[in-house]
Image (cartoon, rainbow, N blue to C red; front, top):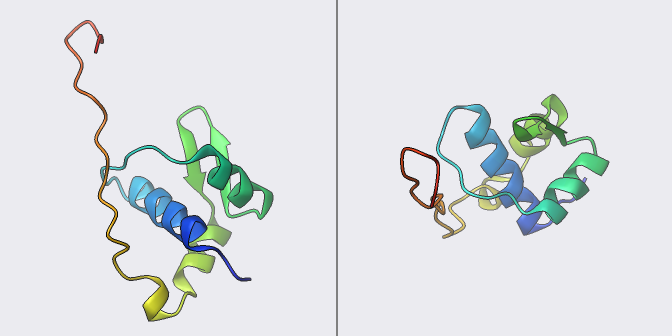
Length: 84
């Protein structure tokens, strides 16, 4: 299966999320495309990588899994009441 660069980036983001890492926003269009391929799923906590998604990510050639130069975009800080 050939995945686009943005699909790979989204899978990496979901893998970091599953590992407990800090992640930014997930592009809904990309996540939906990955869901249609069985590589991601949606639940109450948001998008998650599936076992098939982890396999697909792990099968990428080394040049496909390097740093894409995109940093993690943090969520804006909120006060104690949850307001921006």
